[in-house]
Length: 630
View 1 (cartoon, rainbow, N blue to C red):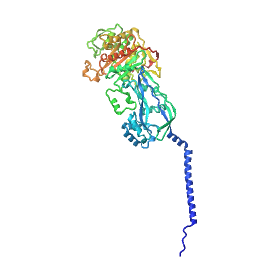
View 2 (cartoon, rainbow, N blue to C red):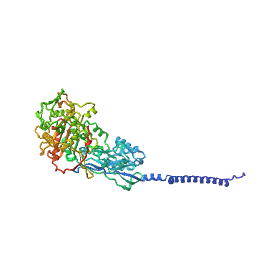
View 3 (cartoon, one colour):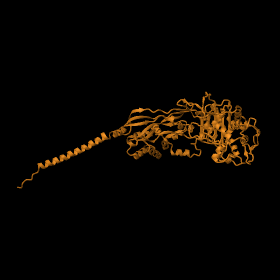
View 4 (cartoon, rainbow, N blue to C red):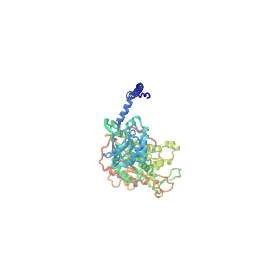
């Protein structure tokens, strides 16, 4: 029987076991070394970095936007409010698949392509872990659908914020203005301090008083440390520094007077400005057509903006301070006073008016609006009452244009008024120097005839005409027009720019002429005083839009509506103790006394029914050097 094979060799098994044990021990040692090294890396080398990241996942410092200051009219009517709005926001770091999340949101609520496009644009300038708004002004049912599906959308949240709201809408769009979302252009103009102040704030004043007083209305940003969970929801507030709200503004504007001006002007294009004669405070400021400023607060839609910007009536255009129009015969009181002071005319001056005027050695015929003339002995009072052009042409021919320019600038023409609104235009009252430098041509006698009637090169804004009228009513005291009456309860004093010295009897004659415009049966502005128990002084004006060939008559029916003359009227009341000055412009309204004067009358009737407030004291400011030459 063969020798039996040994099944086990204890020596071989012992050696194999020892080798395996050594390999296992070595592997464990290597793994322990790797683990220790990793621990060392996490706990020692990169401890501060990972602790910071961990804290950012658990604790965040969030800016707290301040409440924007409110704006009131002089009687406490709220013109700019803050209202709660619910927005849908996304924290990018919490979202795994952004496109899938956006698709899911689009299935739950209305989400336009423009919303997504604007969201992606905002994403480019966000800060880490900052919620980026996707949709504004969610409806209640939309909030409910988002809340029910919240578990499916980590990083998506509904946030409440206060947004600007304008209760009276279009009525104050051109004065109060509006806020809008901070744009790339705004960001490019920000200083480092601006970046800090606007943290947590998405809106900025764009136009009107919202822009002029942005630094007062904005407030001061606050901060809070919050603890959040893995989905980005706030669990608790650990620490908070409250924001400081913006300060409130109270305006000189009167909401009721503003409404009367707007309703009386109706659907016609134009502007109305009323000024407190004793302070320069702007009581009414209307530009029509207007628009709803609430459309701009959270970002206007493309369709709405195209509708406004493409409109032939340009509702976004602020006619009161940006519209530059030939002032027409509304300048005659100023020109009359200047000629009296220069000795060109006097109370006894009489001229013959055959209905036309000719310069010496000039074949051109300048025709009055009444072709048969105003009589053989026309004086300044009759020339103003009936708007006799020939009287003023004869006066201008004997008067130097630079002296006309000087008197015009004293009444605020040809320079910005300095009102506390942005984008004001300066208008123009020409001089020899201006024409030589701007047109490269000398001054001609015919230019003076145009200038004295507020035509030719002369341009003025409705605000400038209101300031001019208030300065006449004050017998030469020129106030800077102001919209804001108080800032956070602190009264802003009236600012007297300068005082024009003129002979009292010359002022009396100008007042007599302006009063005759309204109160004489043949006055061109008699509709401004109908039915009133106080006396009004004013001057009507008609400004050509297109030129009429020499010898041709103005034919309204032959012209397009937008080519017809502008209608203007300026006035103040009451004559014995002026309180309010008004300027009215109606584009293509043709007859100032017929179309514009009734608007002024409505404002006078409304304002004079109020009890007379105490007169505020103005402070003198030597700013006569600021006058410009257009």
